[in-house]
Picture 1 (cartoon, one colour):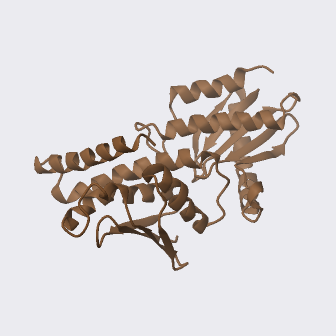
Picture 2 (spheres, chains in turn red, brown; picture 1 turned 30 degrees about the vertical axis):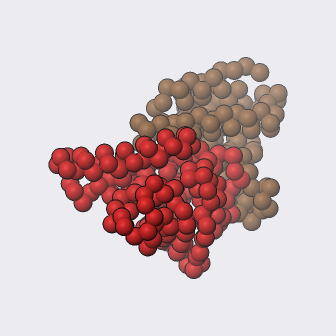
Picture 3 (cartoon, chains in turn blue, orange; picture 1 turned 135 degrees about the vertical axis):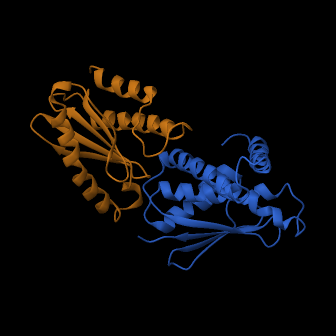
Length: 158
Length: 139
């Protein structure tokens, strides 16, 4: 991954860029999150292709999730996921207590309403990565107190 | 070296296929197509294998009288199939492996190209040149 400061700055600009174009009426207002998510999806697909180039074949779904939590997260966000929980039926909860993209904002609950737009790209990133590895999923994020956040991955069985 | 190189998508449709002697293209397409069953078989057998045996390179898929077919599957389930002239005995397993690595590196570059749509046919010139270089090289 590129230098982390650059990534953070680029990401911030991306979010504000998309929202600015929505104000000017180029994108429908409610579509901003979707747009960011789709950008993340494509990036995730590319990244996972590169990151898994030298790894052994994955054993199962859990193996893939562990890879996302450890290697993938470390390369993109410079730290591992703090906690991975699963019900073994296709739902995984990835908890990050100090999520990089939220550390720039003041901690606590003050800007909670703005958090979702800074998480959309990452949701897409996870979804894109998983989809390239052959897992269809729905990823949602929730924040109760910044900078901690949780990503819920729901695997869709065929 | 190789006489035919193919890239097959996750859903088993060709993303890229090129063979060196163009007059008999269909024969190679057929060979690649039949090899997909062997690839599937190898992958499902590999799931149970030990960690150190789960590498991406699948080795020789099957030999015919004139050709040998080798396979490689990436973690994203994209398959690379390479048909090699079997009279070419100088080509060892290690060289095949490194050819696949080169192919994989090149494919990754294509995937990371923002102008490429995942799932489309590969039309990248850089990828094309790399494949050509593996076909003409004489051992």
